[in-house]
Image (cartoon, rainbow, N blue to C red; front, top):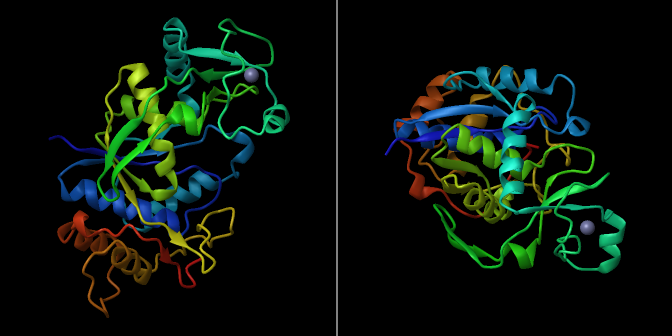
Length: 292
Ligand SMILES: [Zn+2]
């Protein structure tokens, strides 16, 4: 089967050790299968973006030896495609307009959106657009974590596709872009596992294929919290640190002997591709010793 993979950072800050795990995992998995590896910049949330971060990310990826196929897909240029998907869903009767504020919903105390505004099927002022989530359990098999299932309507409820401020939601953009780029396997951090069922619901309603999913173990701090820009994980050092690449390959379960030489980044990735064993990837999070 043709394999098209991707790496999709959001420019809310520079890449850190946690992002390097996702980059190395998705890259080696795609290249070991003779597949393509595409780069997508998830820059659809201007309030959360950090000026200059996208450029920094591209520089970091190049320095760490990654070679992506084709140009970078910038989500900020994709509004027409997102609007077309929303129009399709509207025509199918799968969306509604919701004016409930966060505070109003919080007062109800329900964990999932309780479908209050489902009757509003034509545009309203100052409203978010929500997906009318069908009842039923989504099943999928993760290539590391095995069988997964979630009733999205019970757990999340009708989720937002376009925010009240006009910004497109992450779920909508990811599903539309994975389909447009022909992604056949999504390899990403396990922090995104609980988005998968929502994305599958959306794929089915839009009539686009569901890719395979492989969720990688997370790098965590000593207290168990995820390494992220929010927890001030350190930016990947430049020039690149060969030790970090070896460390990441080891944390991904690959058989990296102690004392591997400090080769150029590109050669370490080539080693990773040559020796890639996806079945060895562990599911447990690993401690980012001093990496963050
Ligand atoms: Zn509402």
